[in-house]
Length: 304
Image (cartoon, rainbow, N blue to C red; front, top):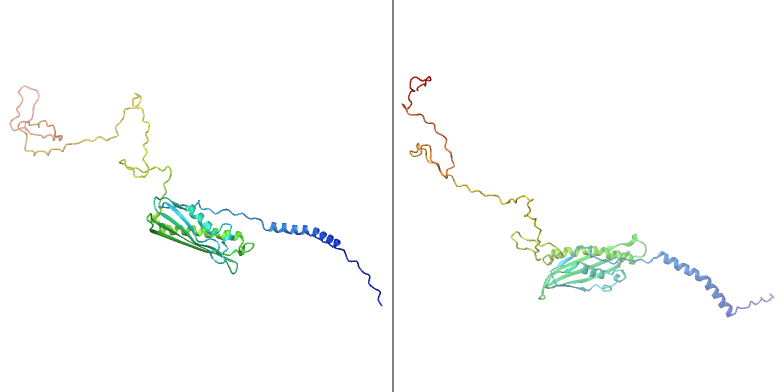
């Protein structure tokens, strides 16, 4: 027969509790070290708010513009837009606030967000879609025109680290879609609502004025008085008129036909209005007019 095995005394409950406390005290630093390591691998990221005030505004000839949001997160099954730092519908509202300006005195515009969604497709692809339209309504409630804009974009974040639906990937997709939407909406408004676009007046602009003094601008014309130089000083030269002198010349009277010497004025009489000078006419003396000089003189003349 084998000798009986020695009996090992069982630890009491107090000792078991002490051993458990020791194990927990030894393992707690390891757990905390692992948590700190995970925090270092996934730092907290901050994202700049999306703004479009740097883009050219679209001034509409309406008194007011309202926004209707039908693309809130969750409106489409499987939508992930609520996880983006800036949901796409909020980005569209910001775009409408920054770029659609009411600069008229009557009627109103309605900017409607029909869809703003982000879906996680198979293969780790993010698909985003935005649908909006702008209506222009007259003061009597009649719809005068509209413009429709739609943007779709697929984003493959395989080259980035982390999961597909991280906040960084969602933010990047929303930013890319908004760049496309700004171009598409402006193009559609200019093509379909071009008659409703106005040019906003610039503060301090100089109004155009015609040469006859009638102002062609909408602003009041300003008259500027310039200081005139002192013309009474004796050191200054006399003023010279800048108006060119005009001289009137009377039409010359037609020359009368030359029928011979005038019996009253053989050499031509004075004329107050005739400015034409007649060429002298050489006349030969009539025969027998010349006489010989008296005899006894020292000079002789020949006869013809």
